[in-house]
Length: 370
Image (cartoon, rainbow, N blue to C red; front, side, top):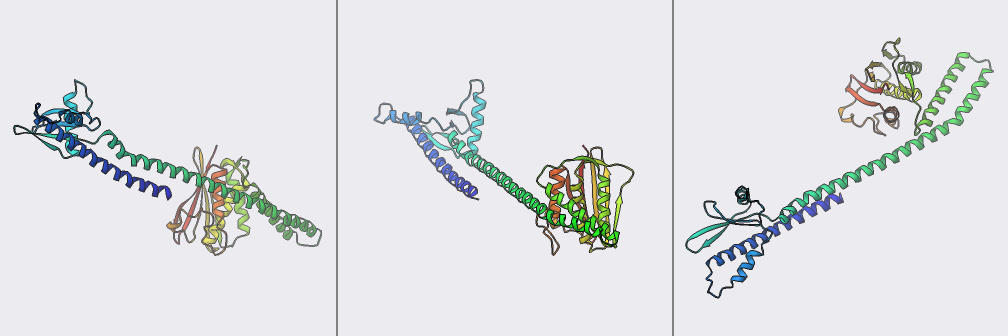
């Protein structure tokens, strides 16, 4: 903002300076015309100071001038560069420019002859007119560099917060998970339903997986060529057992075909889980979630669709921002993390493909196959 204020102030000052210089040049040309007129009518034997008049005419070395009659027949010119071959062409072109730029000064020559003095701005004044444009360009460049530096610094700070929070969460989860594992082993020694213990084990393993995910945030994850469809299937199977019976999951792809891509299964599973959990919330635990895979020569398209309440177009650009949520509880970090995992770690893309109010939403993930 300060740079903009300085730029506007400099613009007005330069504009004022240009106008003043233009007036001064006009006065100089008028003085030159007056000297030319007096010199033409001066009597050599009189006491008039012819030398002084000559000096006035000679000292104009910056302002281009042309003297012509009423028929545009050029009689004299000053401070215009041309060669002998193109003299007439250059002078005619300059005369046309001068007529458009400034009103001519009339010179009355003894004997009833009238000539017209045409002129245009000096090179210095012309350059000064373009100075505000150059200045604004420099200020714009400064603002752009400052913005990029600020944005880079802000992103770096956000990354540090993400990494710190993730590492601390993984650390804090470690102790209770170890205790839960010990309790599960103790339960196995008791006369307790084996299925119940099995479910405890599954949830404990799930907590370990979540801890592993958090611990990988901020590190460069190892990507291994993996069957994306299998990762999606195992994630959906886990969600099915812990979701309402009114939620219908549809996997729209051929299970016999391997859809391979460089992947970190643990992190990518987190992305699918977040999208599905958001869909479940949007459908109020009743509706259909469909996950489809479309294979292109170099890419995989994964679409996650739901039949929920949809997202207003006003929020299309905000859904991936940290803190954005339409739920009464939650931190609004799920989609932001999903975007970070897909785009930063897997060099893919994730975006809101389409959404209609009270009809549903589709998110698309694009993964590179190589």
